[in-house]
Amino acid sequence: MCGGRGTRLDVGGEKPLVEIGGRALVDRVADALTASSIDRAYAVTSPNAPRTREYVSLPRIDAPGDGYVPDLQYALDRIGRPVLTVAADLPLLAAETIDAVVTSHEGTSMTACVPVALKRRLGVTIDTTVPADGRDLAPSGVNVIAAGDQDRRIVFETPRLAVNVNHVRDLQVAEALRRSEVLP
Image 1 (tube, one colour):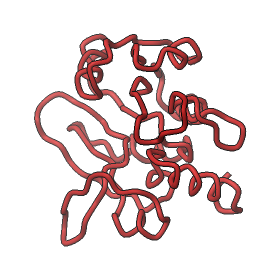
Image 2 (image 1 turned 90 degrees about the vertical axis):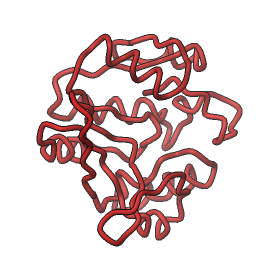
Image 3 (image 1 turned 180 degrees about the horizontal axis):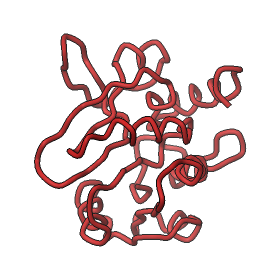
């Protein structure tokens, strides 16, 4: 999903094209998807991000730009289910992490979450939380959408899913983690 306006980041350009380590966010996510075990990947773009629409190298689904959920539904109507969805603002995402999410899928829809405590330790923003098993979780931006209304939450304790670039501080944290010896 790479067609949002990216207004929270406030960097004067389209969020999917913001660079970390000299590479656009959308390229980092596309590379992780391509290196993973999934067999097809699409970039869901919109008129809200026209430069991104022209830039992406993956096959495109040009959604109308009515918002994340309507654009996701537009894409689902064209490709079917189950489908792995990934936000373009996850610059630390790796193929191994995607494969771990896919392996955790058990036929129903699934939301990959991270502990809020991990996001706090990293110093990244927390936009949405959900309580589960006595702790607060944050959706990561990676989901499996399957038929039916069931939705499981699976917890991953990895910075690779905890850093969504929505604000300038998130961008700084992502860059610092990328430069560290811990994450490439």
